[in-house]
Amino acid sequence: MAVNQGVAVAHRRHAGITLDVQPGTRMLLSVNGSDNRHGTELVGLNPYEYLILKMPLVPGIRSRMLPGEPLTVRFMRQGTIIGFRTHVISQITKPGALVFVEYPDVLEQFELRTHKRLKCLIPAEAHSPLGVQRGAVVDLSAGGCKMCFEVKSSDPFRRIGAGDMFVLRANLFSGGDSTLSCICRNVEMDRATMIVGASFADLEAQDTKRLQEYIETVSSFL
Image (cartoon, rainbow, N blue to C red; front, top):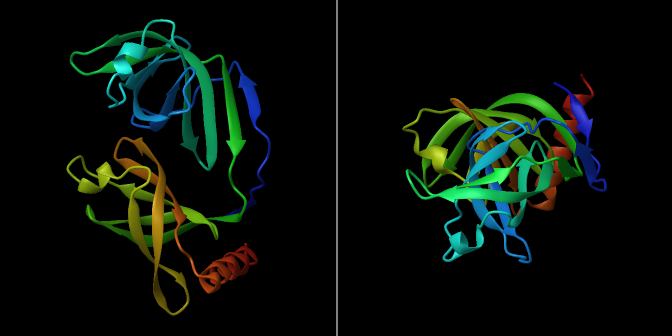
């Protein structure tokens, strides 16, 4: 296990690098001249040529997705917001409503981490209206965590998305299992492996303190 001290920093720009993102990654898309951000999902990409995104389920959006239309796309990766500007290449309606956009030349990122983070492997369960999914906490801070699950195509938990609530149950402190309310912030899929980033919701001050003390105690032995 390892500990990282995350510090919020101004956005950084990276040119000429490979876009490290997997199909199934949830993204936010905004059309030029609009402050509205619409949910979408990466279907696939051809490096340095184009990305394929699901058409957002927003009335009238297709009429704005015309060739050459400027777009801004953002997504979360390991506690960092990644964003880029692009343009629409084309769109199709069959076999599904998809939009093709230009591969970005420049990426911008903004670090969100403000808490010390602990790399770990703690057996855990996620309880939600979709059922109970067993997995492990692989990254922990006083503000949230990252969980890893091995999922089947038929597992309902695969449908969890940004903004959904669930309850984390894990032995985070001595004395038995703890339960913490969580809000899903991002989901990454790599074949049968599902990574869910979450923030803790409505934590009492004493729980935040216990988490900080736990992380400090464990890290002191590393």
